[in-house]
Amino acid sequence: MGYFTSKSARSICSLKHISITAAIISSAGYATYQLREQNAIQLDQPNTVYPYPSKVRLPPKDSESINKQLREFQKTVYVNRDGIARYDFNQVPSNDPCEDDHVESVSKEIDDGNWYFWGVFDGHSGWNTSMYLRQHLVPAVVDELRETALKVRESKACPSPLSYERSLCDAFQKLDHRIVHEHVSSVFKNPKSLQNAASLLLPAISGSCALLTAYSAKSKTLQVACTGDSRAVLGERTSGGIWNAVPLSRDQTGANPDEAARLEVEHPGEIVLRNNRILGRLMPSRAFGDARFKWSRQVSERLHKEYFSAVPIPVKSPPYVTAVPEVETIKVDSKKHKFLIMASDGLWDTMSSERAVELVGQWIDSEFAENHASENTSPSTFNPLKWFHKTLPVVDGNAATHLIRNALGRKDEMVSALLTLTYPLSRRYRDDLTVTVIFFEENERT
Image (tube, rainbow, N blue to C red; front, side):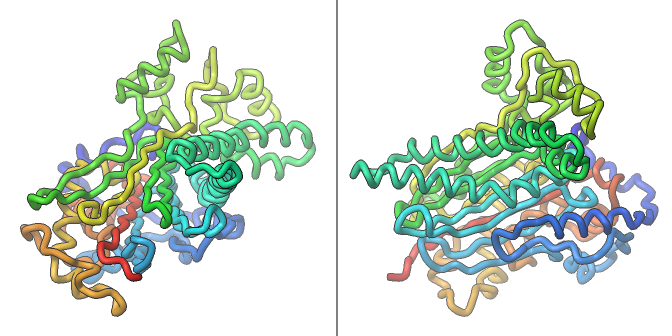
């Protein structure tokens, strides 16, 4: 996500008028990749790996080369327990390096059941904040949920969804406070170490939206916490065979009337939104980092003078941006709830929630997807019904890849053109695309 990104949907139609030229990216990109991986704290087996230096990609002219590039980072994990059949992931970058990040993790430390976590982090002004969230958000959430579960157990009460929602909100808020304020305090206490200052300030200077789903195997409950404009949508099939897109998050931008009203109440007498952007600059109204919109003017001026912060922006009553999420809770009914789509706004720039649900429904119905079920997954578990009338060919065994292919225009000619565009030109026509699709298991094993 960028501060002044053109919407992909508006730009795709003009691709045929572009003269595509190859551009050699300097070795600085490779150095950045190396730094990112050296500093990463792995919560799980890494899913996104950038093993090669930045390079000119040859135009993928045929289906084989298109598929190879489109599927470079795709991943399918078969769970087949706790009400989860599998989840599919894929990511296609536009920025170089990619500013999106993600995490998938399981914890046994909260109660006497498994908790599953899936996160999509849509970074902007760099990848530093999104990488920090990959490292630290799930552990912070686990700590808060475990503390809540312990208090409930001691009081011999039943945990309520509201108590867990508060835990998620507290975890988000505390982690952002660490990024934006505690790190600055550490820098001021150790003014001689510029290297330490740089490592601490980078997650605050850049920013990231965060979409995190927590699933309790014990209660079969989903809790979706959203900070920013990534989106989660539940695919529901009614008894009459109709697909419904059930929103589990709301886009938090200045274009959201509720967000605009909140900002007006919090900053009376100020014009906070200009062209639906925070102070005319930032699109999401909620995000981690983006400390220029949260620091006092005094802090910003000192950091700019003595360290690495950008020129301070005029602020009167910060913070203008919050990381506190909105949380939606729903108990999974696998008879009608079939899957959950989580994606950064690079997907939603190109299609509606309804269209995305329709496409995954089409994917479920495809023989291709059925034939690529795991050996340990019976057809009744993986593809219990012919749910959707096929209208378009499905060529991907990964549902996230199927969505991304359609986001890029579906036809080989269009997909090839969009994948050929390299950064920074690519940012005019497509954003980083990060998609996770979680499938619920109807016939659970005992």
